[in-house]
Each structure stands twice: as structure tokens, then as C-alpha cells.
Image (cartoon, rainbow, N blue to C red; front, side, top):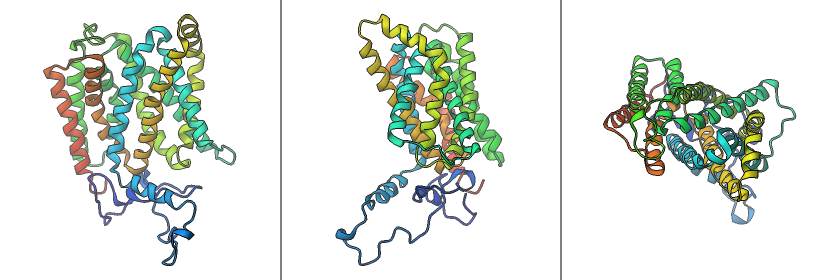
Length: 359
């Protein structure tokens, strides 16, 4: 994305990552997913321009510049917190609506919000761009459904650590230095520690897991595969579509993919409940926490971060998941789990700091 001579103002974040996003028509993304800097004088109103002559859209670039001044890894952390909070707060819906019904309603509400907000235009899009958005929708649907299924049968920290094998694989594939591989392996060691200790959490939702449920493990590993595909496809869709139009299209596809499996459980659950509107409001609320807000934050981060750096920064997800599980679901951490979290945190910080040079 940047030449070796480009100055890096943040650890792991190139200077070009702080540029203003592309014009409404968009422009090709730079190497490794960064936005290219636009014309230097395109938005300059000239020295004589005063407040009375300020163009109607003058405040928008200023807001975008302020948003772009936020370190991209912070978007990742916010996305992780909202994802895990959304998962934790959606678990009460698994009883009346089922995992598939809850997932379908979440994606349905998310698609409705994103379509209304972005109104994506598909006319004139290349087949490759549309295919990427469809594949991203399938990957998002699989990741959302399978991770929910894993959390329904495993402690959140355990499910998240196994799911992290997807980003870890991406980090290893894109590694070009021995140090990058070592950081990824350290994060993998933390995943192993957390997984081995995952069946020993205590508290509601954790204490009932005396071992690692095979179906839950299968769901978690499936979510890991979908997450790896999600990272790669989000990079491509984010570069091809303006703003969050690609996200709106992909989430809509995801809702359609889940519909054959989740429509009936959701309908029966709502029909049998004495307060169906409360369930719908709850589902709408968790849809904002997951997937609307975190997917938007992650797409923003992936546009500005190299895929390798994003993948290892995402290694913080098991730690965030364990903390949210402890706070919301009373799933307490053991010493081995804490050690595993320390490994992934160290790997994430080390990879970001050593990612300052050209990869």
C-alpha cells in the first residue's frame, strides 16, 4: 500500500491509512487494502472562500478526516466488544427462538437497517464485484450461525479461541517474515491454552460445560473457516463498493441464506410466546450490536489495515469474549485461561509493532 519510504505515524498503520475515503464513485484500493490518497487540492475552496460560500457538503470531509484520525486498531477493538456483547445478549433468545431463528431475525433486522441507510445500487456492477458480495454474505451467514451454535454449547471464551484459528491461518498465509510467523505461533499457543481450559469455566453458561461438546466444537471450527473467508472477502468488497453498500448487500444475502433454516423456528417461537413484540425488539437490539455495528467497524478497519495486521490484532477476540462472558454470563476465568489470554495479547501487540516496516 505504501512504499518503503512512507512514514508510519502509528504502529502497524501506514500514513496513507489516514487519508480521506474515495469519492462517491470510489477508486481502486491500494495494495493490501488501503485507500489511496485523492487529489491534494480537490476539496480546497480557495483562500477567499468564507462561511457564506461554504459548499453544502463541506462538513462531511471534515468529519471523515476526524474519523480517519482514529487508529484503525481501535475500530477492531470496538468491533470485538460489540460482537461479543451482541452474542452474550442474544443467548436468552436461543430458548424461545432457537439458534437458527435468532440468527435469522438478527440478520433480517440488520439487512433492513443497512438497506434503508445505504440504498445500494447494483446496476452497472461487474459480475466479480457482485459475486464477491454474495460470497461475503454466505461467509457472514455461516460465521454468525455457527458461532452462535458454538456459544450455545461452549463457554464464550472457548468458542472465540477456536474461531480465532481462522484469522490465525490468514496471518500465517500472508506472513513474509520469520517474526510474523513467530507472533502468530505465540497467539496459536494462547488459543491452545484457552481451548484446553475452556471446559472448566464456572457460572451460568459456563459451569454447565463439564467438557467440550462435540457439536459445539464442530460449530466453532466451522465458524473459524467462515471467519477466514470473511476477512479475505471483506477486504475485496470494501474496496469495490462505496461506503457500506457492499455490507448491506452481503448481509441481505446472509439473511436469505439463513431463511430456509431460521424462518420456521422464529415464526413458531414468536407465535408461542405471550409477548412476541418483546422478542422482536430484543432481536432488533442485538442485531445492532451484532452484526450491524461491528461489521461496519471491521470493514472500515480492513480498508485501512493490512490483512496480516488485522488478523493478528483480531487475536484479542478470545480475551474480549472471555471478559464479556465473565461480566454478562458469569463465566469465570481460570489461571490457564488467563495465561492463554496473555499470549494472544502479547502476539497482537508484537505483530502490530513489528508491522511498521513493509511486509
